[in-house]
Length: 253
Image (tube, rainbow, N blue to C red; front, top):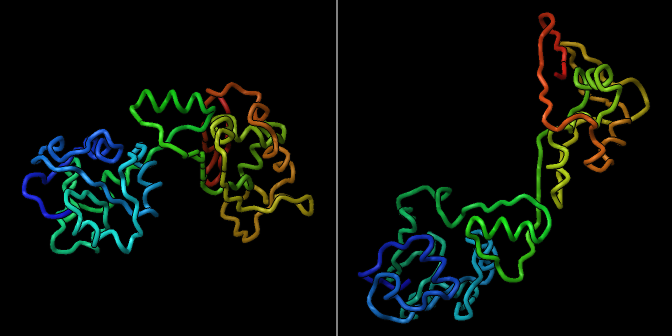
């Protein structure tokens, strides 16, 4: 924004009001009376709407990123979102919710706030958003995405599935299956080969094995609906105990 001497800090709520058009004058932000002109880079507008949970007001001006700084310097009453490396004389960086862009780490910025809701029906998502005070952005259809760590159902895990679950690999997902299935996109790193050729990698402590192989039955388990992953109660805990040094036995209680 052009240099001002009456507004140095905004709350996140006031910033949302400015972006959504609820506030249209600097007087409502604690400064002297002057029309508010909000300027944003067109390639950042969508992400900003989603991260802050607002719908942009009709008066917001969307510009090419290269033209944003010059426009902020020459537009009376401008409020613009620019990268720190673009700051030039005539632009005053504002403190937002106590976060100072010239002093505080960038990853602590309230403008990079992550907004996550559990994927579900549209009506359920709207109900959640209303309860926590999010405004529904216009023309945005959020994608539910879940990424897990490595999935390696071999060695002692594979042996436990055979001995305790009758070879049903769906039991692995007893506590997390419904959550994984709730995502629109699920990314799992499967660090094994599922095949009927040869025997699965055995449960042998300190075995150096560069190629891990799991029973192909795991493929059928992965393809099932979440409701069929396990017949056990979803609240049943699992514990691991050692029966002897170097040997792990999995038990379900």
